[in-house]
Image (cartoon, rainbow, N blue to C red):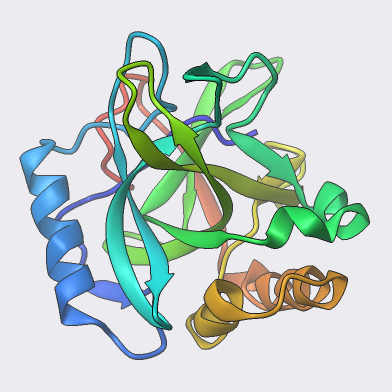
Length: 217
């Protein structure tokens, strides 16, 4: 599962959208600087962080704060909701009705049984996107917000020994399709093929500790 990720404000390479949207990139950089490189974690009863999410508004990429995990009846869902298996979406494509891209410079996983933390990504300073499905939810304070769940798929062979699943990454050329395409089985199948095209570039390195400073490599 993916339970934490980073957003380094020092990113210099952006592989998020096919056509770089300067407003989105500047918003991400400002958000990351204001949050002092903190690791992004699921939102919950005690941790009320809202994380930056790229959605589509009238077909254009838009940045908005969002709750990581689903809200049900004004409270965090009692079932696991921060991640969604790609296989589940293939079986039930209705879950694709609303989608987003999660910006990151790397995600963190604990290798078991060695209990060694690793950082996964494309290298220092590279901003990229993880696929997510979304739905609206009411917070404990009564406010409505966008909630998201990161889509997970089987890990490529060279990373499977570290963790058996990875986020489904979104290549820049597929970003518009993911955000605005019809919610069908074909869409998730195409997204999986697109994500696999990035496998050779994915790398992982051990972290010095698990403090979660949000900085990749």
